[in-house]
Image (cartoon, rainbow, N blue to C red; front, side, top):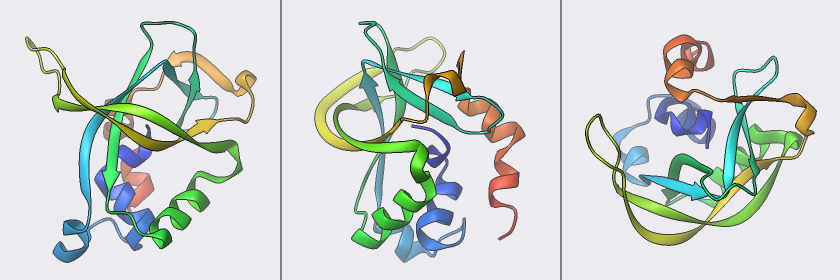
Length: 147
């Protein structure tokens, strides 16, 4: 849904470093997915986003779904997300192909997933959509540089 879509950050949180050993990387299956009925907002004065449900039928959040997480991995992810978020079971569509210029996103099967939904107050969310590409370009190095 946010910063954890970046593999170096995901691995840093669950393995302690942003460049995992090949065997650690092989334990996980990561696929792009779309969550309908939610919107991703920028959090004021923060690098990370918050997602919230929205009544708009056209709202959706592009993210990733990860299989192969251990209980320890989930514990570390919960600690990383902190008290600003609540875990919720949702239905997402795994994407067969991600939209590139001149092509469409192809939605595949629907699966159950767990996501972290923003609960720390809508007043802390900006109306603007959080930009993952801008985060990777401008901020991600600060999140992984201590390796």
